[in-house]
Length: 151
Image 1 (cartoon, rainbow, N blue to C red):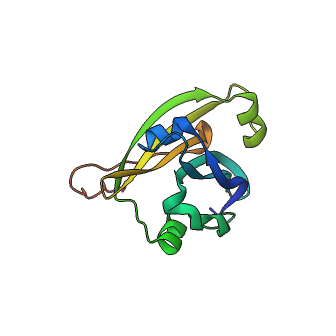
Image 2 (image 1 turned 90 degrees about the horizontal axis):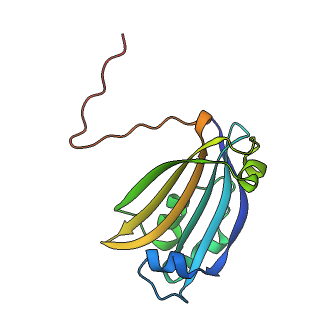
C-alpha cells in the first residue's frame, strides 16, 4: 500500500495533561503533530503525537505528508526511541473522528496510546485512532521466533 498523510496540525503547544505524561512542567512547550494517515489514498487512522519542543523543535520544518515521524526525529534531532509502552482499547468513532476518517459515527476504532522512551526518559506521547475494519496487528515477544510456515 502507498502511504501518505494529511497534516492537520504541526506546531508548538502547551498541554499540561501531556506534559505530565512526559514528566515535564505543566507549561513546557511541546511539538505537536496531528495527521490523518492514508493507505492507497484511503484514511486508516488519526495520529496525534507530542514531544518536548526542547528535543523535537526541529520537526517544525519537516514535511509529514510523506515522511515518517521516527525517520525525521532521527535525521533532524538525532533521536531514536529505544523503548516504550502501548495500551490498546476499542472505542467508538465520535462525530469528529467520523468526519476525519470518512466513517460512520459509532464505527469501531482501535485506540493505541503510546509513551515512547529515549535513554530511559519518556519522550513521546501518541494517540492513534485506527479504523477497526482496516487494520491487522502482529506482535512479537521474547526471542524472535521463526514464523509458522503457510503451506
